[in-house]
Amino acid sequence: MSVKIAVVGAGKFGQMHLDAFTQLGYAGVAELAAIAEANPKRAEELRKDYACPIYTDFHEMLADKSIDAVSIATPDHLHKDIAVAAAKAGKHVLVEKPLDITVEGCDEIIEAAKSTGVLLQVDFHKRYDPDHQAIKRRVSAGELGDILYGNVWMEDRIEVPSQWFPHWAPNSSPGWFLGVHFYDLVRWIVNSEVKTVYATGTKNTLLKDYGVDTYDCINAKVSFENGTAFAFDTSWIIPLNFEAVVNQGVRIVGTKGLFECDSQDRGTSSCITGEGMATYNNNFTRQMKDKYGRKILRGYGVESIEDFAYNVSFLKNGGTIDKIEGCWASGEDGREVTRIAVAIHESIKTGEVIKLR
Ligand SMILES: NC(=O)c1ccc[n+]([C@@H]2O[C@H](COP(=O)([O-])OP(=O)(O)OC[C@H]3O[C@@H](n4cnc5c(N)ncnc54)[C@H](O)[C@@H]3O)[C@@H](O)[C@H]2O)c1
Image 1 (cartoon, rainbow, N blue to C red):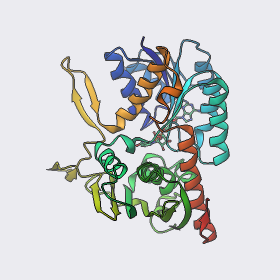
Image 2 (image 1 turned 90 degrees about the horizontal axis):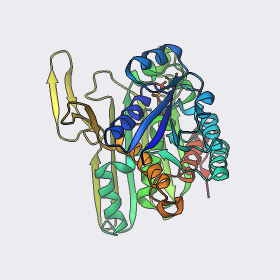
Image 3 (image 1 turned 30 degrees about the vertical axis):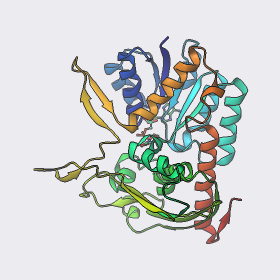
């Protein structure tokens, strides 16, 4: 039985959600049942490409009883009210990372999902990268020994906060927009909770020239309960002519060995007139065509969203949530990552080490 999924927020990343459910429609797994997009101009554009109902008010969409699930790709600080309303309407919910930018907001979403017994999943897609999964597998098997330390970097070109969404970048930061991906990934790999956080943040170097009032970079040192120490370097001010929109990677060192992953450059590069040098994170998305010539995306960027549809399908076809518990990033995972991010921002403000446990 195919599942009916609606998308709320069809901006830059919402497009990935639209593509995911569209292509699952080809396989009869899911149907893109509706779209809610608050910007009337964008909603009008979508009407040309999508045959499903398109709303500007998500509340109206939630009244459609035939919709099984909702995936939310609105700006970070606008997830909560939609997630709570969707869960209360009995829809399974996928929320883009971060679940919310307050711990209390995460609790509210989790409670709403519990009250109606729906699935609550967070789109932490780094868990679906096959190279990251290899690290997780080998760490879990003890092949790296006890994990002592590691470091992570995730950096966006400056066009992301200054041109893509300058209107809501001040409600976000490199920690919220980028860091949360890797706070989740590392917590998942080392299988331990964060004990303490110390962070610094730098403002007013580059983004001020674009009138965007937020941190240019955030650098955090995080200790886990099992003794592992990690450094997370995040920024969104790297030059426009860098070889990719994102630069990212992870390095992890244990008593029996180490593992390093360039999570951006996966081995192909190009240099085309007018474009300059480019490298590609092909694990994230590869655009292909199926045998009928239809656009198909592969890679963890789309597969983590598809995974939600498969979970909803499992439930619609008689499965229960307890049978798949632990197989996706849950509301509780989202809440823990938000706790880490909140502590990082608190440490920047106070200059103190913040104890989470
Ligand atoms: N997983 C990833 O790799 C990844 C990458 C980029 C962004 N994101 C996340 O996706 C989310 C969206 O980011 P983006 O870059 O697409 O932002 P965006 O500003 O491009 O798009 C957000 C869209 O949401 C719409 N919107 C806002 N409030 C709404 C409401 N109440 N109802 C319906 N639509 C509403 C806006 O009109 C806009 O079109 C953020 O949470 C962001 O952190 C995830």
